[in-house]
Image 1 (spheres, one colour):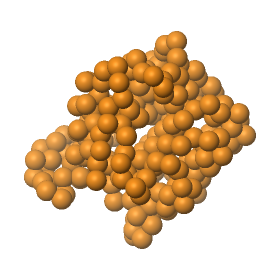
Image 2 (spheres, rainbow, N blue to C red; image 1 turned 120 degrees about the vertical axis):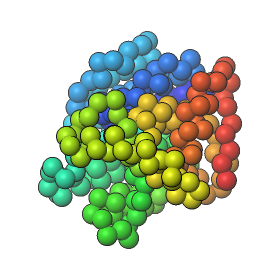
Image 3 (tube, rainbow, N blue to C red; image 1 turned 180 degrees about the horizontal axis):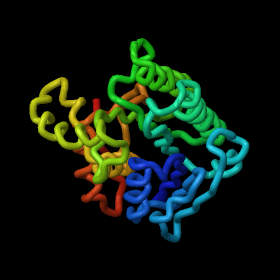
Length: 240
């Protein structure tokens, strides 16, 4: 069996930490390399390697990319409204794109990105426009496979950002059942389920000839359920 070798940027964030934690439990994992400004202390195991790097300086981690086949990037700013637009772009867009470019140069074939529902280069929202521009830049790199995770509201066990998040955490689950059909992609998703989805997607195969998959709430639910059934073989999960 080809044991997967995964490298990840952003494992100390809420979603990234859950994805890394789920990956660390999968027997088919050959190596998980975590890059970040700090170490994820709850991610341990024989196949886990952690390196403290400057996420804004690719030279600090380029040599660590070789030998991996899959990259996951969940790097991002927790509260974009609390910082300048320039600072947001430096982390959420430039640092992520630099990581992707370095991954491509190192021969990594599958790149997974934590993005946002509504991401579009044509959006009037600065946040969504920046995310859309990043997605377009990643598509232009022509990875053999590009997975774009676009969640809406992410539900965490604890309120991390004050009153606005407290209101979302309380009321969003009540609104979710009303979001049906084509708008179910705006449903909230629990952070652990999203982490499971990102982890399990590493072990799926994508049959679409376009090589690019955009994943929303329904995909997260399916993937997070399937991770519990991961056995000693690669599971094929084809989406059209």
